[in-house]
Image (cartoon, rainbow, N blue to C red; front, top):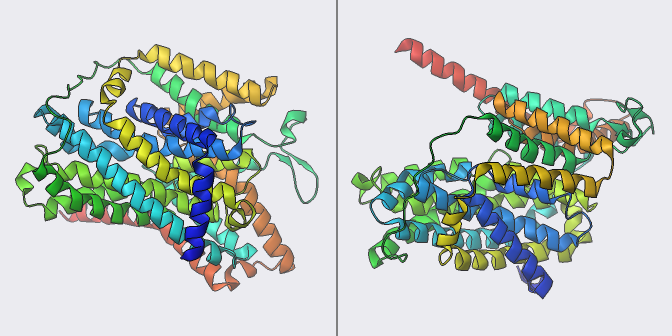
Length: 500
């Protein structure tokens, strides 16, 4: 406990430096802005900034990326409440009650409980991150190559099974990423693989180029391909922005319950923010003294899910920092950000770069304070952002993506790859294939291959080594269950439907 407090104190010394505070402020401002704009989430924004920040201070850049992640969670609630359009998938539940409150002239209290709930949840969950992460690091230090390989197999399966509606499509996306991970010089033999005589491919496929192509270019092409929908009607914020005594009384327990759900579920390999927000809404509906208000604008239906949403963001950072495992699309892009600076998140990062890790964790507390100060007074500004014409917005994204990629890697081959990945990202969206597993496959694939070959080398080629460790065997069984469960549940649903 004392060690964690001392490390966190050192982290605040880093996070409170003027330059780091500026990075945090830029991050939370950008994050809130992109959270407000429907279709542009934190994953896309961080992907766009990766090539631009590759020569900047690693600690400052990562603080900015984390600020964008937290800010995106805050900003998503604004559009959910005011125009019934979630900026982030995790804000879908907030729209159910929040928009009804706005239509009833209570948009102010809805925005206030969302912002304050996010602050409470973000702060409590970041405390959890600071105190539980070192314990997970101590456990991870004892992992052998077979354990690490099993852990990465679990990450592959859970990411593929939980992103998108179809596990098969998720696995297809993952396979493409793993295939791209094979491109380049084999670290053990020195042989070139899948380079097709192109010298630029000897170093492998750049994660930043793939991320920017799939997320930014693919999204811009997808938006351009769709016909124009009728403009959303923005609900004006009427009356006071502040909450009444009754609002406070009905909000504080949902904030705490949402936090208790969001943090541990966000930290699970198959967690994410959607599951705890749905669970929080269901629990609040059952526990509420005013169940008749649900569906008509119950403040608990905004407070609980928003708290769960933000707590899950801190939870997602725990497996990312301690094990190097991303459990969300944004976490996958953050992992690419670490790798851009030659850093590999995991147990060794806490030992080798304590200033960076603890500075990043401390900056999350700072970001939370900044966000609650930014969100309530500037709600008018965030609403005005919705008036930006989509053609301008996405044309700017395409220009920014191209210029950033050329700046990071001045090569025609890189630009051609960006265009190809952009078209692939568009096609994947068009046919409902998740794109996050592909990025995860490219990042974790080479690591999984290295651990597999290391384990087999130690055992002189005996594959039994992969299940000899109780931990590795347990992780592989969990991965198998995660792979089979969706098909089993679908079969069960069909069986029930046939009986009815």
